[in-house]
Image 1: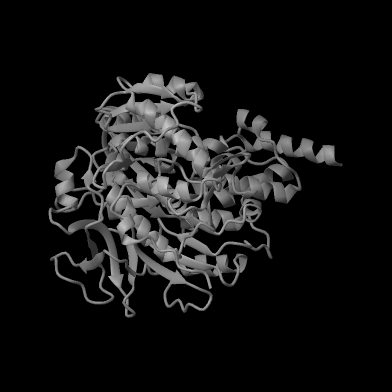
Image 2 (image 1 turned 45 degrees about the horizontal axis):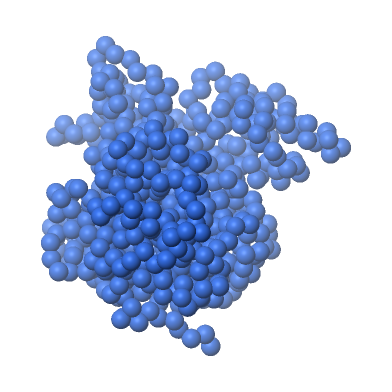
Length: 598
């Protein structure tokens, strides 16, 4: 029987940088990170991180926070640990963020420097303001490899992670090394992580979930294997799991559904022992439709985590688990956490009564960076910090917590938290826009769609392309509404506030907003339209429509292309399609490929 590898409590009162060095000393020649043909042992990762740390320390004593702006790859983790070993807090910046969000995060975090590479150097120079730039492509990693000095303390800030904020600007959640080490202990014990484990990694570095596989693996001596989901898509992810012998992975439900749609009947993920699911509501059908692709011994764990709390609740599922309801519980509070459900009067709810989750723990985040008033609201002072989660839930008859939604305007889109207030604030980019609203709607197929509404100022007219351009410039793609409607006025309630429940549903049959749609002229175009409409969930699509702009959600786009390849028995090379992303163009590409195979 495999021995349980718990982290001794004496090892928790330290920094994650010191913990990493202890692991590197224990497993110097073991592969720590692998990405395609690149890989680093623990010793190599440690020495490279030391070199980065020396370059940061050369900036001077007041180095506080250090941001990094790097493309998906091993260098992100070399840099992350280098920043920590220098005694600084890391600020991860996603290269796919719009310029406004990047610029704000760099300025707000007060980063002493930005670490980047030749690929991203031009963009960083244009956006980083007064911050100093360290180009890792100019660094000689054979020099300055010694330990860079004393470790940060357990109370020092480990990172600032930017998440959506209701004021229209992102807010930075910051936490200490001690709290992240306590998270590591909870996570390790939950799934018994050891040096034998191989963890799949395909997250954006700007997504708070990046730390779960990163710390869970690299602070336990395991191997982190990277897969570029944005670049490679879902086709090939099945082979990745089996070729790399992945034992643990974390997926948000929407990613799981897209991945599952590409799998052939009879396929099995051979080595996976634990599938963690979190970030969105998990349903009965998600479990039943996923289990056939897993070994019988594979355990599914539905977790509740947030940027402020990390892992705080979990619910184990095996093939023998009896699921009594459509929504899968998030389980029970983990060690170090107390979760109560309160009604609007602040009193404890009875079983099966929905209320707000109030979570107490000494291991929550420290607050919101440079936002003391907001911190005071969500993190009331006290030795055991209370967090007002704004998540709605109830306790079922078996004592498990069932999460049902958000108390305020916060929603989850593709596993990432979005405050609808930020979307609304962005819609108010022009004085010619008088009123706005953003809501989550459910389309006829049961999919949750972000819908925006706007009202023009008297005597003014703002057309849809201008609205779309403003959103594309300032928001990540997952935050951009799929449907935008111009109204004469917004519905109001008795108090004069916007009545969100009375906002009209879109005309789902005209989801593209194209009044002059051109229909298919041949069977291939017809089949392509049907496949795109099915997987992108947009109706109708014309042969001249820009598919990339219409789709927004790149994950669904990958599934659509995979289905097209299977339908026509071809292998697409999409460079030509990217130049003219229409059904008409793709139909010609498909025809040419079929003729070559004939």
